[in-house]
Image 1 (cartoon, rainbow, N blue to C red):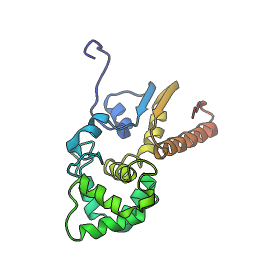
Image 2: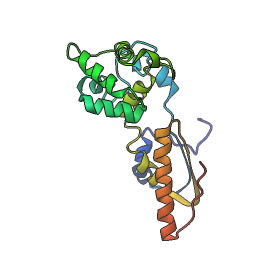
Image 3: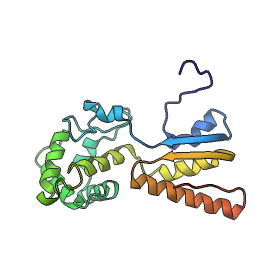
Image 4: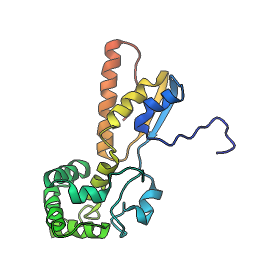
Length: 208
C-alpha cells in the first residue's frame, strides 16, 4: 500500500461516514464499498472470545477500547432482554430456554468464559435439535457479538448517509453476510428510492 500516494487510512467506524467525510472536508464521493463482514483475524484470535470452539474469556469486542463486553451482557442483561437479543440477532428458536438457563447459572456464579457459555447453551437446547444446523452455540454467539458491537441498529442510517454522500451517478456497493444485515440494507435502499422518486432528483439502481 505504501506505493500508492492517493490512499488514506482512517481508523473509524463506517457508521460515522458522515462525520468522517466532514472532517476530511469531502463533500461528495463517486463510490463507496461497505464490507459488513467481521474480521476473520479477530474471530480466530483465541483471546478475543468470539469463538464457540476455543475457550477464552467472554469479550467479543471488535474495538477493545469500548466498555461493553459479552461478559457484561451475559451476566447483567435481564432474562427477557437476553431472550429478545438471541431471538432477533441470532434467529434462535430456543432463545427463551437459553436465556432462562443463563440466568439460572449466573445466580450462583458469574459466567466467565466461552466454554461455560457453550455448556449452558447445550444444556438448554433439546437433544434432537443440537446438531441440526451446525454447532448449537453458533446462533447465540452471533447474537451476543452483534449486540456487543452494535452491528445492526446503526446500519440503516449508515446506508442512508452513504447514499447522500454520493455524487450524481455515484455507486454504493454493500457486501452483507446474513439476513439481518440484508434486511436493514434493503429497507434503507427502498426508503432512499422513495425519497429520490418523490423529489425527482435522480434515479437509483438496486441490484439484490
